[in-house]
Image (cartoon, rainbow, N blue to C red):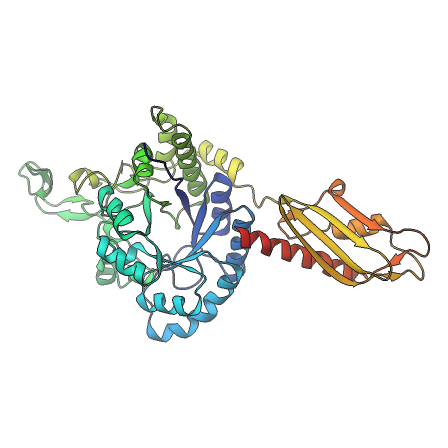
Length: 452
């Protein structure tokens, strides 16, 4: 067996809580949308400060963060694009997922350090399209979901580009990126992030439906009543947990979970199950691979529709892929949801750091913060001799340990204060101590982000 690469497990996040749940449950990367230019306009989405905080938090744990900029953009909207993306690029955004070629060229020109990923909305269906995008600067393509596993392998091997593939979640009836149905019947364009999902609606099929001999089409039947109501355009949700070994062996670089419109419990729960089985297979690829029925049941109860399929990976169209009956979600188990919330949706987790402070009269104040093998030092104003009440080690420790809204926490036993407490002692304005601490925390976060 050839050496197997560890695929990236990529999770959706429609809000900050879902993002935290994804990280906690084991996602290697998260994709999300901001307030503009995203294909899920009706998700909660993130404001600018939330995106920046998410970037920093992801990098704190060695994870990546990608932003969806995957709608078609009108000419007059390009004036807003630079100011919209600049703060995220400056914060270290790892990549943007793009559909519009104008946006593509704009990002390549103005933000060359941000990776370009071709959205599934681009409908990349073969090697030549992937090669073209690679020449244009693409690091990764998200092929159309309608491709077989072998077609994705061909793109990976023959185009020499990273492949990100959907492994779980809702499926579209139309070819990825090619749908105008919502626009035509509802006046809301899916390519502008406002899909009304008309494929999930019921339709009258005159004469009813019957299975044809070759199992590939529907036809009228004399055995059903006239004007029966069906959901002939609603595909079953994708669930590939049982073919994870095949997807890993295919060399797919990123396993993508659909669901930016779904709840945080869905995100955390689904990520945790796929994390478990990806790691299980990689730990011993020769061992029999079997999914526990209880885990399959968990996935079925996390906002999946009543029936599931494995998408197009191992088949080319089938009646079995369509949910003819109600495509609504089958509901969820309250105890399961509560368990996921208690386990994964517990807010931000702070990282414990170590600190060393140097405070001697006549010398610059210095503070060093360390996390693992990453260490940073900042210097501040010259320390003064105290004219009245000198600062004690306890006074300095209390100020340095006030890490507030940062991602760090510092225990007293992990803080060393190097100072001379003999007369007349030292003095530093509280404002200067706070500034020294703030600068050190910012610098440590930047260094961690750089190494992520």
